[in-house]
Length: 422
Image (tube, rainbow, N blue to C red):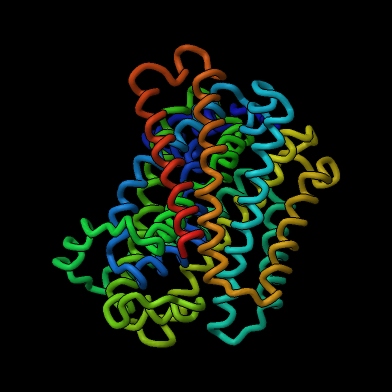
């Protein structure tokens, strides 16, 4: 699966800007996975949070920044030190049975995430009166062209380009001009006894720390040919991505809280056009819809690429088939076949006419409830699969262990309480 890292480290030689170009050549997996993290389902979940609870879930978005970095940094460390993908490493350390359990949770999360991406794209189609089947068909064709005809590096560049459209939400939040006094007051109003609040809290955790992210970033650094000498840059890449993705999530929540959250407190959003109307009333009808369409489409497209790659990589790490973007489709038919099948499956589900907003929030809650399995394996691998200089140990291991237990435990508790109590 791995490729040589020579072109990554030696392609840029000499010149005053050589160091920066090397950094840019190494960076990418962290930013890509974080931009994919703020996917269509995450945007929908943040919007629903702002509509129903105002700014009361904003503090959670801030708290999740260091937690997200801690989790994803471990995946980077495991990938560059061992040269193995996440599923492959679990198979080697714990056996094929445990590997299949872990990769099964990843596959379920991937399929759920794909449905939410296509839900977002279907919502954009509704905004402009375009048939959903046509929008999804063109999307699948474009993504297949990019992936079937490119290497990892070219696919990474396209994914980052799509993902940067999400930054329009930062401008939307600024234009919404939130009441800062009300915002600061609601930051500390956390109704943990309310099942509806707990359900959306779980959804936000699952929208930020997703099972497939662990598999993707570890496989991506391996497929890109990165090694331990690139670890410092990759940590900064991951930290920057964690900040950017949470700024986007917070921006969506703030913008909706300042509009629908003010006009109709405790309102529930029923479809994607309602979210567009909440986010862009001050931009005008046409321009607002266009801005929203760029933002959520970019989020959905980068996540679609990442999630499909994760499914194809992760299953291949356990099943043992060829699984690199460096391989031609004829050389890795299972890899490209699973990538394609996942796209088609998600499109068929969305075209069935399910409630897209409720489905997207439910998928994020499911992600939160899968975290005990995903984060448990990640923590054990960081403790057992790494050599001494890079092994998770000492005081930091206790910190990470505490973060894993609290995050996974609260996600599971909030998800169950919200689902059973609602």
